[in-house]
Image 1: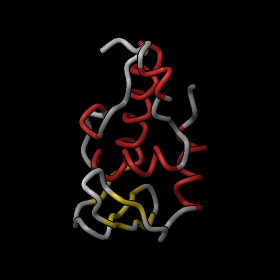
Image 2 (image 1 turned 90 degrees about the vertical axis):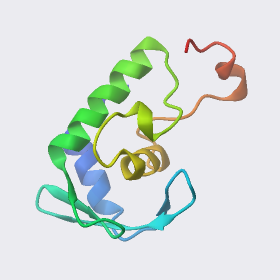
Image 3 (image 1 turned 60 degrees about the horizontal axis):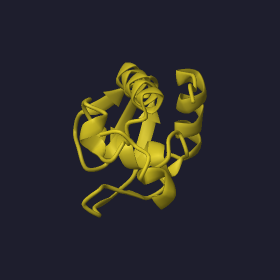
Length: 105
């Protein structure tokens, strides 16, 4: 599934201040100011272009049938925060147990 950065950015704006959890179970929230996403656990921002790059990576992985099994698969700055947010918001999904047997790693 290919989704535009404009649509994802609008979705991210709608979910500001909601609590998400990293892969290690650490809670966090974020706010958006302009074209930057600020996570409450970090001082640096995640830019809209970084989110766009992550979306591109997700698209490539999905097309190749590769499971997006964790933040490292995104290969970008802020992946430990983008991964749970994008997963929770349905930008990508983890395979069902039936599908997992059909994936190529």
